[in-house]
Image: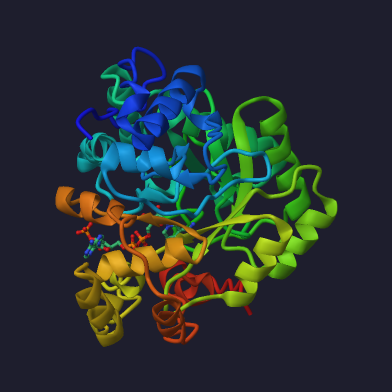
Length: 400
Ligand SMILES: NC(=O)c1ccc[n+]([C@@H]2O[C@H](COP(=O)([O-])OP(=O)(O)OC[C@H]3O[C@@H](n4cnc5c(N)ncnc54)[C@H](OP(=O)(O)O)[C@@H]3O)[C@@H](O)[C@H]2O)c1
């Protein structure tokens, strides 16, 4: 096929379709073009097959259009929230990206096709993410409505009167009027630290103390959640959800929530598959996002994992990667997406930005999916019950 629709999916000014006489493919092309002209990307409806699929940037399109755009089929794993909004399956994780590199990486990621960015107050780089986003929008790389921006309420902002402070600071840093998704970062409430005193506040209440400690605060979860619901009412966020929550807490939240959590973001990789949690979320209509989808590698420099635990070196992952002529990282990410979780992956390297998004023209067999799942050893690297005591002077388990 000679003509290509540019990857920004413009909704107007597309060239006229070729004559139908050239065959069925051109009928498909013509249908796709007229749908694109009349509909915004988020609400694309394709009469051809009714089979909605997701492209790398997160737009839903029919398989025919994807083949037309890229010359190859992509994944058929929609991540449709209860509201009908679609969470792009692959996002860029911003944790540990240095401030000095963040704006450029966000910009490069958008050029590479990323539309989903996973931010947080605690990552300390939301201002720089905001600079990157501003450049993306000013340069017309895509429109605001094509982007999915997630951020997270930090532990020190759990009191209802502080939730609004937290989101407003995040919005102002990101240079946005509205977030697509706002998550409670941890089911951990810590004593409030004013923004003027320290931002991001981090885990420790007063770092200048002789024995710095976390200072827990007693805030009922439902009060925090009701303040999150008010953010939706006020139009400051489109969706709300939780992170690092288990089944019992989510169940309790759903029992009292006016707006149920749309998304759960948790650590997921082949050493921590969390099958029951995923099944519960599926049944409750909660879309799940996998953080640290590459496993130990993120935690080795922090002393929270050993290099020997690397999934990227694991013989099973390497054998499957070699068979598909893919990298181990692509197999891990593909496994995550194919099991129905969106994945957020962090990199500071341009080549890896592209590599980590290039997951949609191969498929793992069900035997391979099962073999990777069977690697599970319930190994959790990001466990406050482990790291809070040594790093922040306070024992604070949430999973036991
Ligand atoms: N909600 C929460 O509590 C929570 C907790 C943790 C993480 N998260 C989110 O999830 C995101 C991802 O998790 P994560 O950063 O912990 O881990 P990750 O994305 O699984 O792994 C990141 C590490 O893998 C390396 N890497 C990336 N792509 C690679 C590739 N193709 N081949 C080899 N190495 C590669 C990166 O190094 P380079 O940068 O050098 O490429 C980095 O060391 C975070 O950035 C954050 O947004 C959320």
